[in-house]
Length: 233
Image 1 (tube, rainbow, N blue to C red):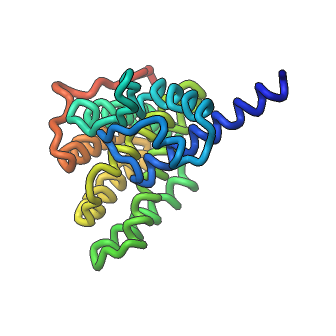
Image 2: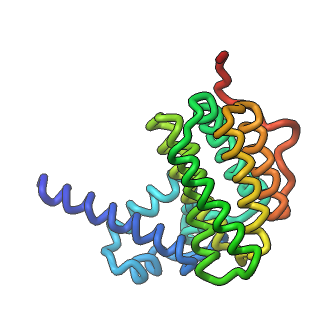
């Protein structure tokens, strides 16, 4: 019984990863209604673990189970887009504050160099390779900010939100002209961190969120984004 249970859990893990891969690769897209049977076919895994994986995906906000209808992939609605990027901003700005307080240098200097290189390349021509490079460097900064909190619970929330944002990003075409402004916004964050300017770093994070939401055609949250977990330094 124990071995069978372990095998079921392993298959559920595989099914969950398979479902995420379908979402991240755009094989099933935001807002789409699919059946569990279709997910079984696409994943190549048995029905039982796929059902459990769908429940897990619903728990982290990737899908919604609609009884007698199927599985609704999270939709790229203005409210969802705003909520996901607002949540990322809340964690990012605290990470920026922590890093600026400690004036992190070596890794941040290297990350700055990467951003400059991407921006310079994208200013000349934007190829598919440069698009992939830009996305990688973009998430590298966001992951660095989140990791600065050294908080496992925050990391879990951040990772789940990153998955949701990845699904949202598959719902629209990538705009090459967004690369240079995004890298510039990131560099403002990095430069504030490198010079130990905590408030400026947090402000730059919020400005980046506003720029990202404008790109999506979504209004930023009303009022100022709250500064979470502010501490006296």
